[in-house]
Structures are given as C-alpha cells and as structure tokens.
Image (tube, rainbow, N blue to C red; front, side):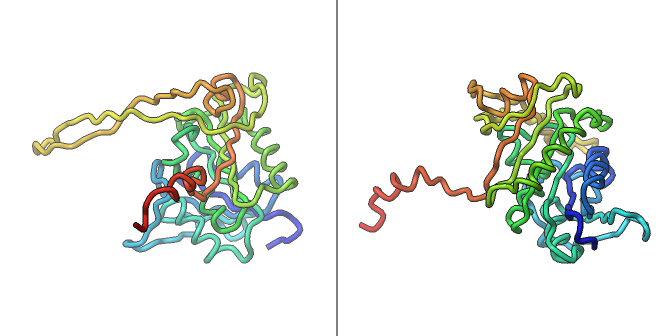
Length: 259
C-alpha cells in the first residue's frame, strides 16, 4: 500500500452497492488510498450488533487492477470494520468514514444507526472516524450537492486530528449546495421515537407486526443538531463511546451500598 497518501477505510450500513457509499468512494479516492469493506446487503438499524453465532463471509468484488480495493462482508457494519482492520488492511488506516447514509442519523437515531456504529467501532479500534448521513431516504438521493462539504470535513479531520476517543456524527440537510448556510458544531437533541406497531396477518393467519412511528423532538435549544438541520446548516456532533454517566457518580456514591 502507498504510504505517501493517507489510508482511508470506507464502510456503511446501506450495503456495498448503495449510491451513498459510491459517492464517498469517489470523494475519498481524490485525497487518499481507499479500502472499502461494507455489508453485502442493507444493515440499517443494526446499531452496534456483531456476528457471533453465524459464519462471516468476505468477498473481494473489485478487479485486480482497480485502484480501490472493495470487499463485501456478510456481517454488520461493526463486523466490517473489525474484519477490515484484522484481515484486510496491512496497516491501520488514518481515517474511517462511514456512509453516506440514506437518511438522518441525528438526535437519538445515532443509537440505532449502523452507519454510526461502523464509525464508532473504528473509534474503539483507535482509528479517527466520521459518519456521514444525508436527510433523504430515497435510494436515488442527490449526493452531488454535498460532495464539497464531505471533502472539506474529511480534509479538516486528517489535518487537524480528531480529539482522542471522539467520532464525528455529520448530518446534511436535504438542500442544494448554494442553499446550505454552513457547518455547526452541535449537541445531540433530546428526542425520541413514539413507536407504532401495525398488527397484520399472514396468508396463513399468523399475526405479525410492522414497526413504524413518529419522531418527537422536545428539545428547542438552538445548539442542537435538529435545530441546525431544520435551519439549513450541516450538523456535526462529536460522539464518544464511553457511556459512563459521570454526572451521576457522586449521587450514586451517596447511597448505602455496603450497609
């Protein structure tokens, strides 16, 4: 592998053939050596699931002389990063980018997101990482409008270096390039999904359920990712994978644990 250029690992959760990841490959190939390891089928909503009770398959799908090494993996986005680092790549990548996701990963969606879990798994492996998402669920979403911003954010991360154990969650509003007002560093909005389960029957008469729901944002702060996206900005939320609630330790230590 060429050590004169940065080495970037690309993954996603929409699958190796998704338009979003092809856009990411195009942008990253202009600035770095690229290796792609992505799921062989959509893995949206898988969160940080890993495969432990089934076999994992890895298939090289790029041709021998292709400048970008591309592999499909039968597992989850987290699996893809693990197997890329341990079995595919000859050295640790300088950066991992995940996406570009077809749909939002703002607010509470970061918990469920396979896209962000791919990035977070890279962070756990000690690799700086960014998850990119566009607020458009259409398979044929227009990613051309956000290419310059993807490139800028990536170059900034490579040059300035991310804080230790921090991964970036980047969401783009569904706007034309000239309509985007800029980039805002944000906090994650306090929001949730109010689930609905639609009960139906199979032709054989067995009950089954189809999950849907309404997104509820009760956070009106102007420093949140939801506010930024709703007002024409790109949101960047720094995410950590240490889930310790440090603010609660003093209170919990005051309880009578050992009496």
